[in-house]
Image 1 (spheres, one colour):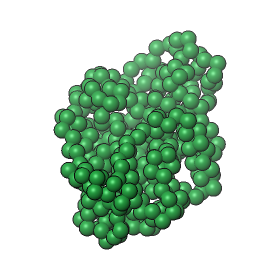
Image 2: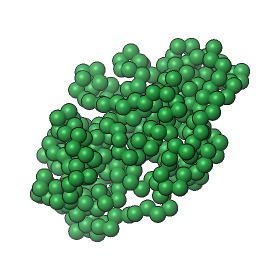
Image 3: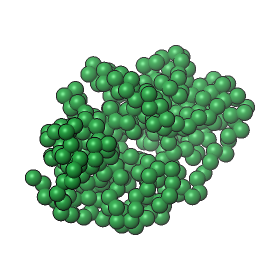
Length: 334
């Protein structure tokens, strides 16, 4: 039985970028399990942009205290259990934290079927913060119709890549915005998008005018800032702007740069709507059912980028904010 746990803790609150020196990696002895507790060997840890907003001490998401384990979703296998619903060897997903061994209650985890997809897929294409968020954002909020122009930012990332593929399945003309020529090529060649914009080397607004001369019907935003303004400048009549995330703003949430072109909403009689997957609890099950079907028939692509070792979690978080990853970013805990 594993006797120790190695965890990533918050050493100091970031000012601006969450650099690796904001964290420390500590090893602790494990106590005996209490009644109803379950001990899980953490295999993969999700690296999510929203984690940055948990390091402030106040905010929309649950906050991480100084010296506390970084909050993160994870998947793993039950090592020991004092609860009848979980047995040794069960594959589970939940708020396991950035650590190698999690000691949790039964409400903190749920069983997953690792026979239909690799365990890591339950953080990616089948994960709540990734695949389910993408499905709900497209199917329940954006609701693209055949022939509509659907533009998604951070399109080579975990959520953007899935959202674009779902919109494409629903008949939309999909344009992705990503950073660098390699990612732009990935959107076209691997994901099958109709168009790609490299925001690092191209004028986003001008490229949108070229690729969508009649305007955008839907903008699915994961970035905020200037990218959002470029989309607002190019809206079609009755467009929908969907706010899923704003990674460009998370390093300085006290000084969020709002859209300067929001009056374009009035000009285009457009609407802007934000969401999170947990606003649609009744849709999580159907989302997972359809996503699982697509995984089984191989009709959807979910790239994974995995850094090995729990000590690399701080590096992985910085890697994400610097736009390094393609697809779902994770850390293999041990």
